Image (tube, rainbow, N blue to C red; front, side, top):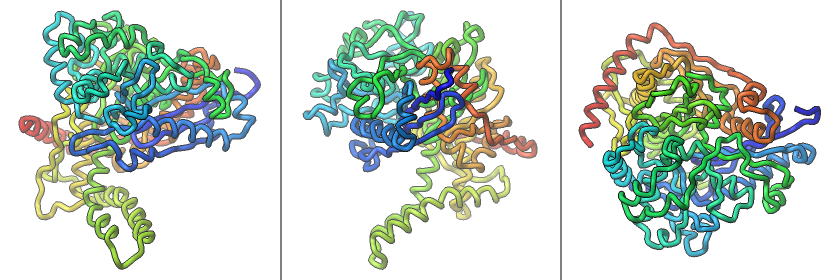
Amino acid sequence: MTDRPQYVIGVDYGSDSVRSVIVNAADGKELATSVFYYPRWQKQLYCNAAKNQFRQHPLDYIEGLEQTIKNCIAKAGPEVAAQVKAIAVDTTGSTPVAVNKQGVPLALLPEFEQEPNAMFVLWKDHTSVQEAAEINAHATKFDTNYLQYVGGIYSSEWFWAKLLHVLRVDERVREATYSWVEHCDWIPFLLTGGTEADKIMRGRCSAGHKALWAEEFGGLPPDEFFSSLDPLLKGFTERLYKDTYTSDVSAGNLSAEWAGRLGLSTEVVIGVGAFDAHMGAVGGQIEPYHLSKVMGTSTCDILVAPNRDMEGKLVKGICGQVDGSVIPGMAGLEAGQSAFGDTYAWFKNLVAWPLESLLSNSTVIDTQTAEALKEEMIGKIIPELSKQAAALPLDEKAELAIDWFNGRRTPDANQLLKGTITGLGLGSDAPRVFRALAEATCFGARNIVERFRSESVPVEGIIGIGGVAKKSPYIMQMMADVLQMPIRIHQFEHTCALGAAMFAATVAGIYPKVEEAMAAMGGGFDVEYQPEAANTEFYDKRYQQYLALGAFTEKLV
């Protein structure tokens, strides 16, 4: 560190918005933050929820990147801008896109600007369920188990399944596609002014957890693995990559074009990208064998362990274990739930439907007043449901739910599964059903913890980050009771962006290792939920009911 202040920028791309933060590299203090909600995504353009199709236009990402960083710089001032040393980026994943030989997403070309298959395929897009099933069946035909580092099951949320689906269903896109790139790899390529897809620096995080890259394979599985699955995949490994990079590595410097657009120097270093939950775990000061739960629309659960402890261990049914995907030099293990906050949002939308419909068609009040009233009332639904649900007595015969409203991510990925609610009666009101949904999401979290433990990977504590962790004491207390472990909530509001900033500080050489950036910039925890011993027996019994209902639900698919 120098005596002169040094600043870094962390950029966090979420499902609905992108946020940038400028922080002081010395202590992690936030100087400015800005958020941009994707305008095309807000209108659900290029999406079809009934078909599980969720696509995002690259212009949403580009506009958000420029606007949020410029807003942060405007707030922080020119003296801060002059001392910005690095930018690092995290994104959702697996969220890949088809690009041409120059590395340009096809949707940025005039002929494809309205074509969903030419856009980024968001993590929760499940249009490639069939392709994932084929990959799983195909993998059993080879002596080498190419799925061993992704829990033994390939998911429709991931890289190869999505690529194969797009190639199959869209001839025009197929003929124009040169390569296939993760969102977290493309943004650094964009910022550094890249012009050749072959030179995109691919992150260890995305490659190892979603694209079957492993050091033991010498890179990606061989072309034969993919071309024998479907000839449409022939040659793609040659146009992808062999080497990958951890996020403490520079992807290059800010290009002259982007330096001019943002008001920064070309001396600003750009870090190799990674997924939001992995950088969020760093921002939340993850420790070995403590499960970092990024709780938003879904959950992404991250655990790190010394590599020596993982020798000979392959955890079944999770989203991968990859050397250096979180902290370089340690194994990063990923799990998660496909719907967490999305489950509560679904129920909120369900109970708000009459309000939405009636106010939208009201002839009694004007449109502006109706919209304001609607926004105010809908914003109060979840807090009021939480308050009323918390007041209900514990009841072993209460309504019971399964949290697979967007399929099951882990343990044992299966995106064909659906949510379940049972035990309904004429007395089943909104707070009681909400309580069942809250229990289900907490039981889903417990199922993940128990999978780690059954595979001889201890879980010694829980770190909560993300919107639900910060905003819902009701859910967090229930989670602590169900898991029978304390949950520490990190004090920083935008933890994923902070994690990106920590990597930026490391890439800039301000800290030699990201662990030192974590210690200096972290800030610690501001809330801790302790499990209530009196509730242990109740939730143990309810969890067994959850498992039984889940087993029944799974038979219906």
